[in-house]
Image (cartoon, rainbow, N blue to C red; front, side, top):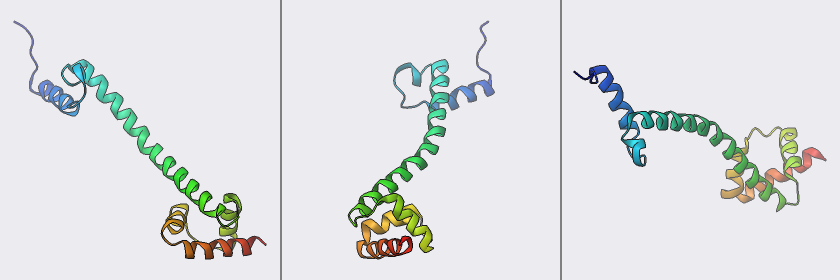
Length: 117
């Protein structure tokens, strides 16, 4: 008599195959390759959650750099000036201001310049 999946084993197998649904080829149908594929996907997802934070910060810095250059200033000097002026806005908030409210951002740039000088 051949060995079959017991209930816990079947549940474990079905849980893995359900997570591998939509994967190409045997990765969605064969338990061994599906297990490898889902473990690999988990590893990429874990790393991706950390990379997302880095990528957004890079985006904000690039936006700020472009916006500050339009006012004749360097990004690093601007950040230094913002800190010296005691402005408690982070890079995300500053980049949103630069996009949606350029007038206010221009005033902030002026304050940063004044704090450095």
